[in-house]
Length: 135
Image 1 (cartoon, rainbow, N blue to C red):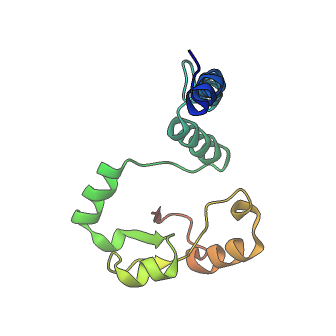
Image 2: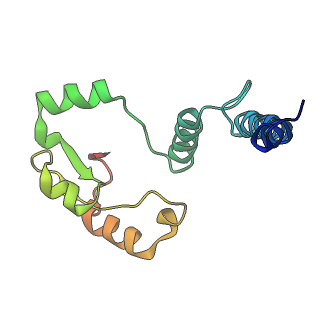
């Protein structure tokens, strides 16, 4: 019995298709395993929090919880200096009353940026005792 050419092509194509799918599945599993989302991986938010806590400790800053900020803001809104770190267009769209805008793009370079440092000094002034809230 003679097979049609399309049936023969399909039979020769099938092992290639199975092999290709196996390779793709292997690559996807490998990517997942090494992407930091697998077992024992560290949560990026936990890493960021740990970094902020360490930098605050080194800079002799005290971190306060969102609940504390809210309570203090409701009790006396002028007791907090609010700094909105979103981009200017986001700030223009909506912001907390009396907040000032210092647009900061969250990159490793931001902490070393002379512009960011000089703008911070202008905004914060010499008073080291008032509470500053960055959001």
